[in-house]
Image 1 (tube, rainbow, N blue to C red):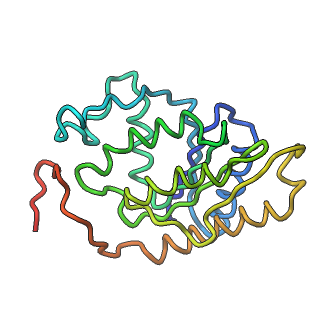
Image 2 (cartoon, rainbow, N blue to C red):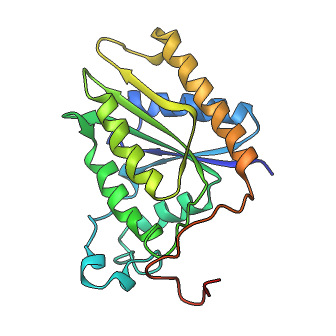
Length: 212
């Protein structure tokens, strides 16, 4: 079975430029033998982080973060945890990531508070801006995800200034960047798979997991 590469689309549109760029990266990953899936956050709505960590750090974990059967974060978290590599894609709104991407990053605290559950997992980051702000959005994803244990694939930062483009096909250089990111993501996942990365002991270890 091939490696599993998940693409997370944080745009409200499932057929917009962000989704198109993400699809290009996933297409390149498939050509390298990976199994791919695109997850549109708009189809799995979830509330903001409830701030449980501030009340009781022990309550901030993957099994306690889901706030009810209506909370779509459970499915999103399951897909991220089961993937061998993840592509995070966001449109740029006012020099920043979308509200959906920011909400996802905050909810993902539950995946690092009691052990880095994505430690050593390769990622690629995509940002699509109408004008400026793509580099800021990439940085806003890169820093927290790196602290969560994700590892950036070589040339895994891809940004686009949409301006007057109607389709990605109008920018061959951008299409090439997307292809390179997808291929490198799979190569990195193949290289890193199974390596025993070291992490600090979690402040709130998962129940039933003994510290060495």
